[in-house]
Structure formats: C-alpha cells, structure tokens
Length: 242
Image (cartoon, helix red, strand yellow):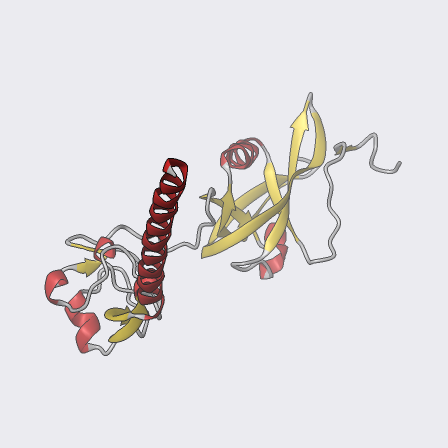
C-alpha cells in the first residue's frame, strides 16, 4: 500500500514538472516569435552619408528614413530619431540600407585617405619616364610587373623585381633633363617627361621598390589577365643571346 502511494506521489511530481516545462517552452516560443516577427522603426540611410556630414545635413538632404526592422536584427546603438545625434558628424561612410547607430557618429570625423589603399597594404610613389610606364597606358587600377635595371660588380643587368603590383594613382607629369655621353665623349641633353605613379604594396615590397629606385632604374610592364610573369635569373650581357 505504501509503495503504491509513493508511486502516485512520484507520478504527480513528474506530471507537474512536465506541465512547468511545457509552459516554459511555450513562453520561450512566444518570445522567439516576438523577436522574429515584431518590428521596431529605426533610422536607416537611404543615400550614402559621407564622413564629416552631420546627422542634420543627412536628414534635411533626404538621406534618412524610418524603416521597420525585426528585433533580432537590431544593431547596438540603433536610433529611432535624430535628437540623440544632433550636431554630430559621420565618422565613416554610411551606405544605403545601413542602420544609423551611435558608434558611427561623433564630434570629429576620422581622417580618410583619398587613395583606395587595399587592406594590409601601404601606398608608395615612384617617378618614371614615359617608356618606363608603358607610354602612359598604365592607369589607376592597372596591374604591373616591375623590372629593375642596375649594375652588379660593374656588370649591367635587368631582372624582374616584383611580378604583380596594383597601381592606385597617377600624379603630375614634369620634364626632367637627362644628359648622356656617347663613345666619343660627346654629351647630349634631352628633356624626358616623368610621371609619379602610386603603388599598393606590403612592407617588404615597399622596401624592394624604394631600394631599387635608389640604386637603379625601374620599368613597368603592363599586365593582362593572361600575362605570364615569373621570377628568374637576371639578364646580363653574358646571357643576353642564350
């Protein structure tokens, strides 16, 4: 008899626990459904907002709108109006469709480089004549192979320095006087146009280019999608016709 009572009590406890678990599950499901389907109207960008542009300028320029966003997609610091950001400027570029969040606004805009430098790279510039830059066909966005002409042990050579580098900018062209002496000792001076070309490189590549520029002459070869360039031995007078 006592055993039966004990089993009845245990069954009642298990049933009560089951009811509690069901209630907790239902409440959690309701909460998940609320987060999934319930929306909040937050400020979003309808046009690009540039660094240094105030929230007020963006608003009067028609670059902001209230958009319904589900709760589970809300970003930290989301805004439902412009009052909290009054007088503040965009610290970075905000693209159409982005939520307006507090961390992207402040009192001083972040400095932005005018050059599109890829992540992990730095920008350096070299000065080249027209022939060395493929007669002006190298433009921002082009990829080039860089060759170096120099001397070693009194012997001239030409060798591939870097197989593929991106050009991200071109500068002004200025004439440079160059004087050459022929075998008879006659000197000739000519004006050669030189143009600044800006490259995106990593640290090791920058060191190679700057050293090569200071100790020889650089020349670019314009690359295409099917160009084949690979490191190899230098070309010297001894190997020129082999």
